[in-house]
Structure formats: C-alpha cells, structure tokens
Length: 513
Image (cartoon, rainbow, N blue to C red; front, side, top):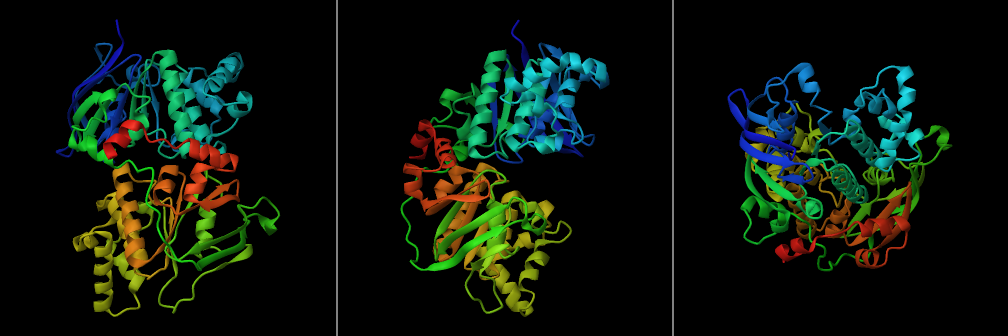
C-alpha cells in the first residue's frame, strides 16, 4: 500500500474567525509537494494543524489521515508515536527551536529514543552517520556543539539529521531556507530533495519563493487567505494562463537584468580605511577590517556576503550608529535639521514601539517642527511610499510587514537624507512584498536623487537593484566592481560561488517576458 498523508476539509478557527477554510490535499511517499503563498496566507498554520502543534486558542476541524488512519483525534503519548517518528518537522529558525542547552548529539539521541549515558555510547556511530548523511563533518566535533555554536546553514542541516533520525515516512518543511543566503539556500534545497528521493519520503515544503521549487517539487499547491486556490504539477507551474495568485508570485521573481543607470561622478560618501573591532583593546579579530569605498550621488551600491561577513557592521558605521576603531567615514555636511544618512533596519516589527500608534513614532522624527508643518511633512512622506494616512492610527501589530517597512522608509525620509542604508530591509518579507519595497526604493532614488546602500545575503536582490557591488567575506571587502563586470567575471572564490547560485529558471523568464 502506498503510504499517504491526507488532510480533508481541514479548517482552523479562533474566536469565531476562520483562519483556514476546508483545505483538502494529500502527500504520498516518494513525492515532494510545495505549498506556496504570501506571508499570512495560512501555509505555516496548515503544517501545525497537520502535525498537531496548534496553540490552545485555535481549534481545528476536519480529518487528517496517515495511511488511511485518523490521527487528528490522537492526544498525548498516542500522538507522540506519530510526531517526530512517522512525521518529521523542519522549522524556519532552527536555532530558536532547538534546545540551546543541549548538544546536537543530545538532540539526535532524544530523536532516536535513547536516554541515559550508558546507552549513548552504543549509538555514537548512528549519531555520526546521521550527521555525515546531511554533509556535516567532522561529525564527532559537530555532535558536541550546541545550536548557537553552528552557522545558520549548519543548524538547518542538523535539524534535518534530527528529523531523519527516527526514519519517518513524511517531513513537513516550513520555510527551511528563508534565513539563508543564496548559496546555502540552494545547497539546503538540493540536500532535502536528495534525502527525500533516497529514502522515499513524502515532503510538504512551505515557501513563498516560487522560483526555487521548479527543480525539486513534483506538485504545487497555491494558498491564499486561508484556502487552497490552485494546484498543479510543477511542469505546469509557469503556464501563462495560470491562476491570478500563482501569477502574482511568478511576477514577484526579480528580473535578471536592468538598464544601466546614470549617477554623479563625484563622491557623496567616503569610507576611508574604516574598520571596527569589538574585542577588548581591539586585540582580537576585527568584525570589519580596514575598508575603503566611495558612494556617488544617485548610486545604488549592493553589499553582499554571508552572515558574519561584516555587512551589518559596515551599515552601522555608514549610518553613524557606531564609530570606527580605525579610519573614518566622510559624509555630507548638513544643516543640523536633517541627517545625511538614514538606516532602514532588517526587521520591520522591531523598528517601532509596539505600544504606540505609527503617528507617534513618525512625529518623533519631526518633533522640532510646528505641529501643522510636522503633520504636512508626515502626510507627504506617506504619499511618497504609497501609504494611506489612516494607517497612522494603527499600532505595529495591526500592520503587515510590507506596510511597516514602508512606514520605516517614510520615517527615514522625514530626516531629508541623501543616503538610505537598507540593511537586509526585505529579508523578512515575502517575495511579493519584497518586490514592491525594492521597486519603491528604486523609484525614490529616481524621484528624490537618493543614493542607496542595499545590504543583502540574496544575490537576486543585489543583481536587481545595484549599479556597483561590494562583496564582504570574513570581515574583509574582497571585491568592489561594476555589476555587469562582477556578474560576467567574478574574481574572489566567494564571489564566484555567489554568481553560481544565481539562476532564474527558463520558464520563469518566459512568463516574465
């Protein structure tokens, strides 16, 4: 009998409000089914409902069947024989899910059902074998580390090893690559696909990135507003007569090229040998080694590199939030009523006080102006970023991520900057919201003559927005060149890896064109 995991008329409600509406679908052994949709569409809620991890305030209705037997009515120890054993789970942020006090070895032993120091030694070979299977070596060394001692990519591989430990029939993967850079994202998806095929697993992969699934998924479900609105074979995914919600995700894929843009010849902002060392008396390794780079008026500088490469330190130095321990930052002189450089942070929900309406947060940026003028400035800034004035009365929790990021840009514009430093400013957004924000930033660059420093671990973003590219690696600026030259002939080995990870599938290009 073909093993299957089915959900039939699955609905989730909270205080009378319907969050998921009569969803039905199935995953079979040996296939990978991708669930795509925008943030808040119900994708993650679907996985939690299937595996029985809904919070108490949410109620699920409908049937969930594993090999024809209902599991939605199981509780306690009965459900424990299913969760983690027959159905594994990959989470979006492994370091937040894994126990920070436990080693990876302890996590794996727990997944294997092994308890007690005497028994652990007998299973050491199995522990190391699982780690080696997912490409983690030296396995003995990795097994002894805690989650916080691993990089993001290593932590996700470790979580896959833990999910595979009990030899499950199915794995639910909830946005497992959303926090990874372009290289690690491609490697993780390839690894997941290879393990799925080797073991004959059924995998339900949640993502908002429709371009990433073409080479790994067998079927696709499109989710919107808590309902499955479309489904198809992956081979039919990019058909031109596709459903409107599917096409919205396809059109959010960033194009591979843009027309050359002109910018001023003179330097607007100069970084001269600037570096930052956080260690005591600056005797340890520097977070950012001495860096020299210039930004021109109207230029878009793309800054790319892996986590820990020095990108965010560079951003904070540019914005004046920290002072370099060596070198200097030369920025335009202003009149004291405006700031030449403004920073747009990564996480929009952390950029605002959750207790205050947005109006109060934006007023703080123009508190020196008379009330009427301050109100007019805010209205103008909201208009520039495409937000309605009514949004000012909402608190951050009542807004979407895209709306909050637009509000953050509006607040930055109130300072009349010449340079916007965008530090991973779209990484927390779904692909549609990301495209909207990037297009907004490029529009502001054209209309207001702004210079942009766009920092990202996503080479697709860098390629879409940049005139010039700066590559950081292990705290050093290793390459700084025109975008076209960089893409055609990258010099540093990390640059070559970044360019190699870029790929817009041919069917996507056809639809976009």
